[in-house]
Length: 461
Image (cartoon, rainbow, N blue to C red; front, top):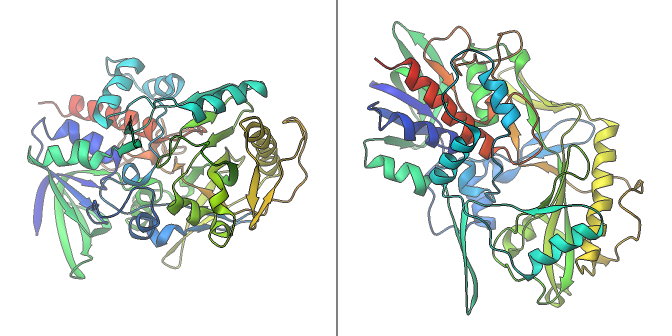
């Protein structure tokens, strides 16, 4: 039997942010992570990373008329270890909404929170290059405004080209906190949480030894992600499953060929995005590495002409009309989603904009089904009529345990505590109460920082 002051379930960005505040405050803190420690042997944005760090090798279907594949991870550092690191700071309206739920507002501003998160995550501005400038100029040609966004990465250019150092919370926060007393146990799956006298009892399984163990803690922070956190609460009978919707961003990827030598930022994601063209639609530039490109676009592998071009994976993502729902039946969890005509129309509209954008940027065509297809000359406003045939996926899941002012419409109260469960908190992407339409990790980290400040204020002796 293990007894701790504070246990954090999960080790992603939100968990690390919370730990970075409570460990220096003197709380004996243990992080439990179902995955393993990352290794430098596995290259960022590689096929090996997908196989080793993604749950089910990146395959988690959401059932509905238009199937969607959710991307979820299991590794120390969580999403920060595998994602592209595109950073969007928290929306001020959202933060004010959270603050307005009660009268315990923390004396800080959006700007101060953003500055703190950037320091903790080691956010850096993305350097511009010839290709990124071409994309920015091309967006103006179709009357859109694109942005080159900051990333959780360091990029430098030398005589041999670009080098990129991906930043994750593992290196920036968790490792330094180990020297301050933070404890981390990996390959531990938390099966159930239940109250026993003044402690929370966590029933766990050691995945290495396959042995059961019990861990007792006065305080528990659940930060297991948009899918893991509600599953744990539902298995433990601590939340009304009717509240467990899952907000997400359906995304289609497209592979465009450019003349050889066009791409000058090889080896990393180039975070150029158009986000204001149509409400609820984000259009962007994504991968250039061969490994993940081959994963997302397997038809490229067997093509004989790949050496003739530079390939760039670009995407359209939307905010769907209906969220997914997490359902628990016969001991198993299922994700279901109701499709809407508006979602398909938004993706088709975004596809038209993307084709125009790529054409003005110098693309020779879209590579699909092993064939290079010339770009259509329709305007972005023209309604596309093609059937959606590409695989739709989502790398952004959130909102499954939303914060609110009543247990009728939320899972956690204004202090991030599970309704009716003293000293049991949720502090990850599942707490976001609205759809945001962009990468949610900056928002997640900001809310986790607000939570930690609230927690320390309310537990101050």
